[in-house]
Length: 394
Ligand SMILES: *Cc1c(COP(=O)(O)O)cnc(C)c1O
Image (cartoon, rainbow, N blue to C red; front, top):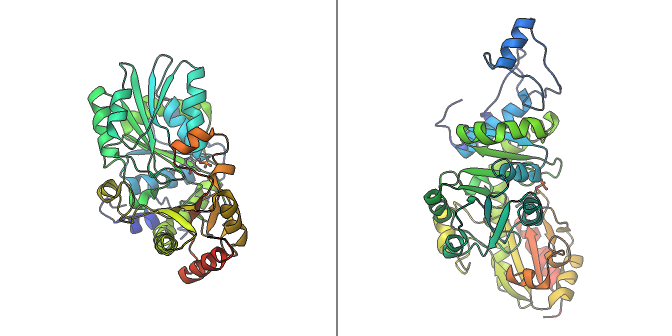
């Protein structure tokens, strides 16, 4: 494997471990355990004197390929594959804090991520402050002597707000805290949090990395020192490991990731431009459009726009429901990153558990819908929106 390969090459070849059969596609090693040539070899493996696998909860060859390919893509030294995105988020945060520590997190988080820091962590004596992550001074003001972790997602779900990752990393470094970035919405193609100064990156691989609606998965990436000190034992002994079958699915997903993200982004950007001109639409939020409220930060830290679009309809919930029900190609689903275009109404689905006030803070109104653009033909998607909008009163 060459370090100088560009992303599209890494995503096809990075991390491949060929067996003695020389298979073209990656093999699935669907095994729980491993056998040793001798009792002495087992002893040496357990002592860490020789390289090799011990038990699939700790690591296994198919997972290794997925982890190494992700490392090559992300510029990370180490990775751990997990059974879901939430297993990755929970492990990345909880493995490095103890009672008495303090977390600062952006309030605009995926619902389950917000639950981990806002509800779960305090049960174990870990305090958490949620801030409006768009403004650096809010992060700075929230710092306490015991702050250990900063946690954010950028762009955010569902209103595609952006956080200045390099700015947050600078603040964290001043106090020796670690920055964890949930990079799902940006994808590894468009944003490299580690290069921007973040310390740990997490993904729900369920989204663009699989990209074809099959498997749940997640991954945590960082440097060797952090993984050895904090994550390794947590991962081994709490058991969030990914199934090798899932790793194989995701290895196949990584091969086509750049092609899919490119087409999804082109679709999203053209649909955003089309919708911004329609009389039924109050507002379109799309990172990559000049009218994005934080277009300057987008230009600084992202290589491309987004595969997602937030759309606010003038007619509130009634119009949002009518649009979703009238779409023919675009399916109603709270998932995202799929080859199929998907649309959801956050106020009644993904963000229904928030108070009206908390939803308003995040810019989620009754008329907000979130589109995850798929890889279908652009003109078919625009025609689908045109026919659906024609059925809504302006
Ligand atoms: C989906 C998602 C998660 C959780 O991932 P799962 O694979 O569903 O567990 C976390 N963060 C973000 C931003 C997501 O979109």
